[in-house]
Length: 287
Image 1 (cartoon, rainbow, N blue to C red):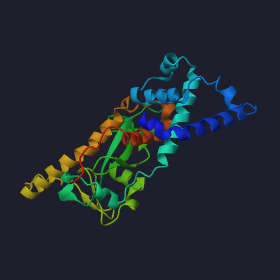
Image 2 (image 1 turned 45 degrees about the horizontal axis):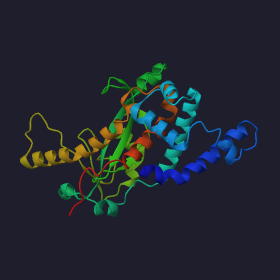
Image 3 (image 1 turned 120 degrees about the vertical axis):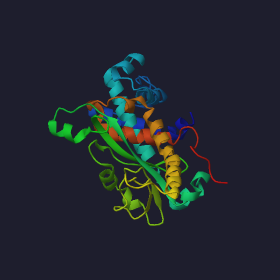
Image 4 (image 1 turned 45 degrees about the vertical axis):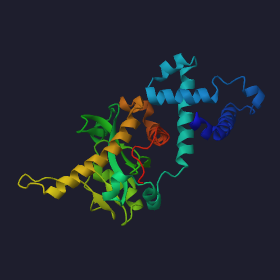
């Protein structure tokens, strides 16, 4: 309920705008609050609950229409309305943290990597196979053996999501996604990012990159590199936990249908930003 109380002041503005647009589309006068209240099929908090059920449980619109005893087209409008609303409200809050803000909440576990600004990782969402052969080849992911959409997610060392890219075709490489996402412009020379060994981005960003080294077949990894690699692996697990938390929303754990591709960027961004309001920090602050 705490999150509901946080967004509640903005909700009634959304309702007034929605009613005004609806009335304009019907070439009718905007109804007064007293008259419109009797026409509301669901209260705002129930619409919000419906949206969360759609996101977290992944129920189909027809199923939601039956459960909430409303028409399926109404379900579609509610989902679209709340997707736009939450993307606007949550998106208006700057999730990017300054270097000073990250340092203020730096966990003890990062003391040997104290300049880390964020941990980066890519995630893929399976989607319905498009009919176009060209799109099929662009969206096919050899890693998932399926058509996917791919996003770059960054978290601060203490856990909150601080960067979300748009979704790209599943065939894009991690490096190319990093370049297209625009995050490189945000990273300065006094910052560092922590990535997996598949992230070959040292030549396309100004910041330091903590990345496990590739092991050559002819060489044995030195002891100091073994220790550093193990430390990075332990710390990188935090971004994997955040992504797993986001993907606990069943909408993203199932195959995304073409009917939701048009607003999937907003839905994914909303899910990522909502994760910042869930549970507690993944790791504790230093001191």
